[in-house]
Amino acid sequence: MFEKKFERKKENFTCSKCNAFVEGTGYTDHCPNCLWSKHVDVNPGDRKAECKGMMEPIGAITKGYNYIIYYKCNDCGYSHRVKSSSDDNFEEILRLSSKPINE
Image (tube, rainbow, N blue to C red):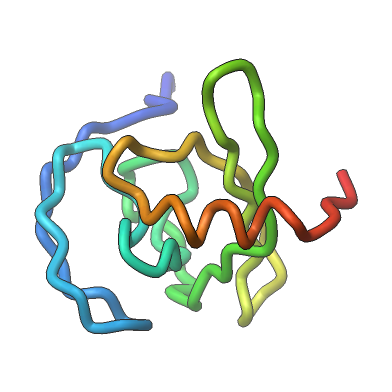
C-alpha cells in the first residue's frame, strides 16, 4: 500500500518549550519563536510517531537563500532537518548557525 510522504495539517498549537501560541499554516513544524519542535511525525504531517519527545534545534546551516535547521529528539535521539520559515526568530537561527553540525 502506498503511504504519503507528506500530509498538510493546518493546526494551531502552544509551544511546549516557550509557551508561545503558534498559528499553523499546514507547513508549520516548529515554534517560530524558540525553534523547538515535537517528535510527532514519521513522515511530515502524519502524526504517527509514538515518541512525542521534544526536538531540540541543535544547529543551522545556509543552503542557497535558506537556512536549514537541524533537530535531535531529547527522548529517542531521532534527528532530522527542515527549512526555516520566513517568520522564524532570525536571532535564534544565527545563534544556531554558530554551532558545528556533524552530518
